[in-house]
Length: 317
Image (cartoon, rainbow, N blue to C red; front, top):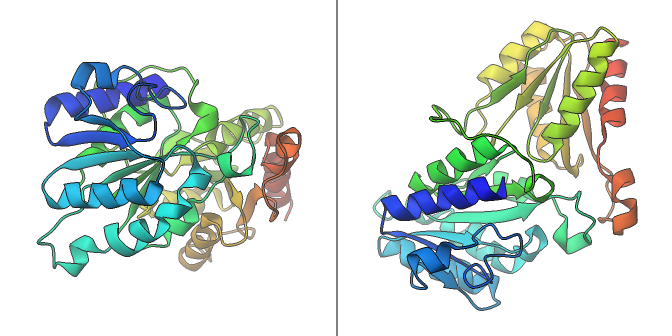
């Protein structure tokens, strides 16, 4: 997946001279996860820019570049390092287009390696998507396959709205093919069909949900799995259609369940599908604790067993 993002960035840099990549160590080093490796040698240091160690400065500079007509792609080295730039993102980038009545756009992409699963510590393993999905004016997306990563990063760069682009760190080394075309990179994707229950997920939790669904197959319960891809805004039509079909819904994400996106999705499904549901919408997420030491993260994050338990409780309601 890291190579797919690299290729997507390269294609965007080739197609549009206004596109820039900027962030800490993105040039000479090629990024901590080597996602931008080789891009500075290929496109030069004026388009692939190593910045100072100041996240607010990275985003602030990107705002100025966007106002002048550029399309900057910023890398935040780890999810927990985005907070120094939080004010720039939620108070400035998100509001620029509305504040100017559409006269000034903010085509800024903010790439954030997110989530756990790599044995890192707290500020390197967070799932903070709900902060940004709560902010009107931001588009928030999360890729989970190399194919989606390749096409979604290009779609994000082409967007005239600011995009917070979450890249699950645990999936950087996931293998896969890149398709020749991608009709709707940001729409919900039905990964597998079924009628026993609907599992809604995204990002690093997709692989967990699929593994759980495969294990449930052996028990005779074929579950439908949907990858959201776009976390803000959410196209609810496929989710509601699936909920009405299966009558049972489980939402899975790495973030805490308290205040997480799962609660918002559950509320919307309950409102729209009340008479179709045979059980309450259930959520599976991380425990409401600070991120633990690496040796405990497997106990902290959702695993297939916890997803299977939630689906089983829903089926037996």
